Image 1 (cartoon, rainbow, N blue to C red):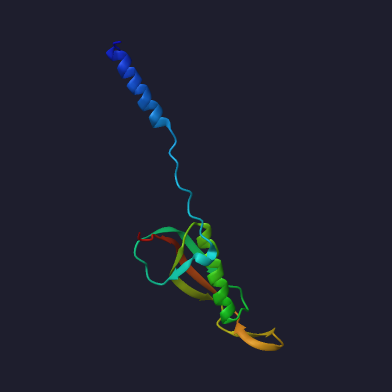
Image 2 (image 1 turned 90 degrees about the vertical axis):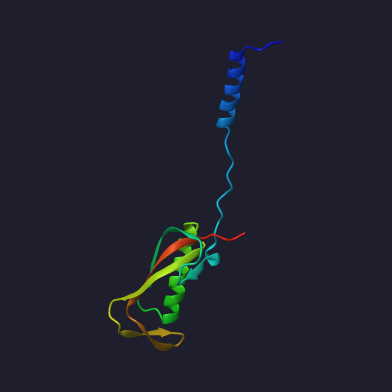
Length: 129
């Protein structure tokens, strides 16, 4: 049984058209948990920038509370963007550099009366295989 050249080309084109319309499955994006986010002060090897991260502490926090708060906020923001790292760009203070006494744990302790802000980039550091 002979097939005409026209029919043969029509079948080939139809097969190519159908093959081109199939959906290609892509891998699900990796879900990053905040506790998996690492901090960098120098740019790591191979990475891509996912966005900007800015976190500002609240007044009347102790130095340790400020650090814990900024780390937590930066991790939350970076993880929500799918980043596994935070590249610190700058750390600044705002307001007066005075202290106030705050009553905690049964005593008064001096704490900064101003806020601190961290500016960073949310980055995805590519892993080498």
